[in-house]
Image (cartoon, rainbow, N blue to C red; front, side):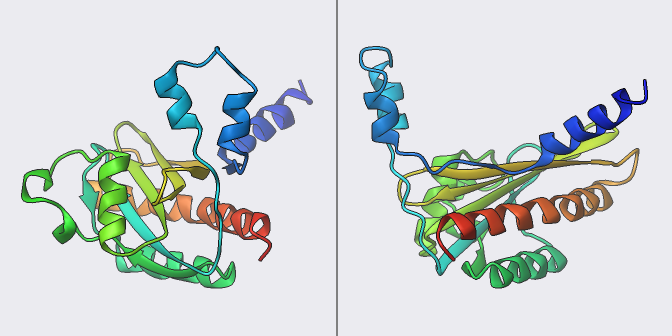
Length: 193
């Protein structure tokens, strides 16, 4: 029993650690000839091109995938993280870059990359705050705007009980920031910074 508690805690902590990917898509596809559906092969064939300093767009999504403005605290935290890791400038995405029919609707990765491209971002940090239930889930991914390559992802959870939406999102964002910082440091190391 005394070994079960540390193992359980370690498993929970590992689940929140950032996951990184910088492998070649072409090599992945070439190692599986005839095994991959052509549409899946095209999606997998993207190549990493991680370079810093860069312009990094930030997309904050609420539970249903709607673009939401990050709080001032979130923008400051993300700016500090980028500065410490020497990644470059952080630019929150604006809903003004959305086509009018997309405002207030769920956005997919391609739509978010288009908005980031309109704001001349090289990379995009997408983070989503899901406040449904008593334990909220926050997830983040670092994506190449040009080709959709996903370099890293991470997540965090926080007890939100029955608090209001705004307080729950603030608590989740605060829980996610150390994970995004670890993700940024890992990306900087992989890019030779």
